[in-house]
Image (cartoon, rainbow, N blue to C red; front, side):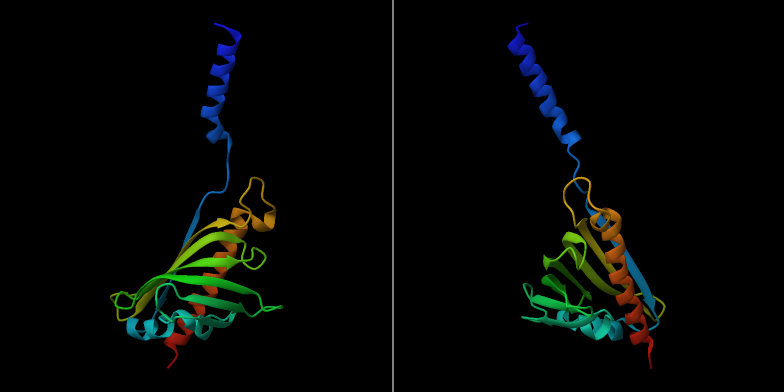
Length: 180
């Protein structure tokens, strides 16, 4: 075989391996739940409004949404932290009867939340024992999308940050919903 033919075979072989060599981030998924000793309608009344996050999440100062619970509504979440960091999110689906909504990040500074391209679902359901189970789940990529991320933007940092946000909200929601 001629030299150029071998070179072409080698080139095509390398093209076939290129996807295996390229390793970017993998999508992370988490789900946090809380059982609440309160009926689902009471719990849903607390969390159902897309702009009500500040009413039940202890880390949120304000959460104004431009169109309420209408799909496409954009909320600006201002955190209780120095400098009033903000996260911008969009409501992707809303089902009042099903006690669930789905939203995604539109503008997130990785210094505020070390993730990119995230979506979340919040669902309240009857647990069959007179109470409720609330699930907050999400899918996202780490904050650094290239290989070899710095520790503060790697998969572990992203999972830890989102888990902390969900846990703080769910734990406070339980406290609020179970209060007399």
